[in-house]
Length: 181
Image 1 (tube, rainbow, N blue to C red):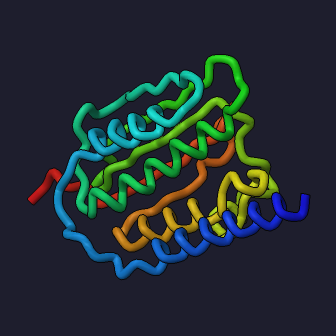
Image 2 (image 1 turned 180 degrees about the horizontal axis):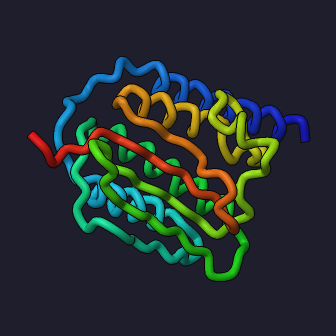
């Protein structure tokens, strides 16, 4: 019905405004040393609580991985990556997400990999653009990856899609490591 369509449209506008507020946030919050492995576990737990079905979430690599940044902002990035992975695997049997944590030189690297359909090659260049989404109306604003990308850049890091990783998608988050004086 027209009323239903109007309500869906209004909800989408509300979600977009909320996301835009976050996107334009002044980046406040203290930069500190924190364990991104712990932040990844917290993020996964938050998303798991809201899920209808079971997703196996595993951690590999460094058990503790110290980074420099704002823990709340990085948790938002990780929650977004986990939520996108969960959404991509919806309806699949035995969905799974793997976190891999490592140090590479003066950086800490977190990879978030799922076993979903992956990212279509024609979308690889645009997934970080504002308002890009493959989800149906009401399931996302298309700002999650754009905001996440901006947050990570503000931290002096990088967020990228790892191309051609076989089944599923793999996102690589690189941040300044925080275990050195």
